[in-house]
Image (cartoon, rainbow, N blue to C red; front, side):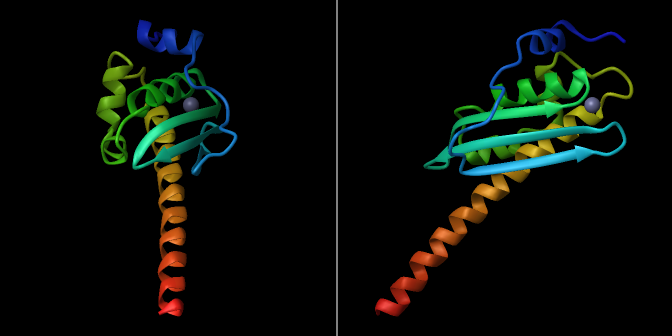
Length: 138
Ligand SMILES: [Zn+2]
């Protein structure tokens, strides 16, 4: 197994690990094949990723990919953050992961996208609730 320096760096000093006390969205994904689970908490204010935290129970590549992904999307507009691709993440990790470890990219992106969806669902609920009360008031 040969991980690149960028992967090792994230592995030794993972960024943004943990949970948020009051996330606006939470997403989890799991890869049954190797038993990895990733979870992202996001706090989004005015369509910007204000802060985020992640947790990974799994292999080294998944832990490093989660850490790198938080750096890629932290502070960015939601639309930009949602566009971060497997290639962007791979580049942030210095290039392709070792054979058999590509699942790490999918795992953490999947969890992040679910967290964004969760946030959007909450936003829609708030929007619909507001709309509903307006109709009733009118
Ligand atoms: Zn893994």
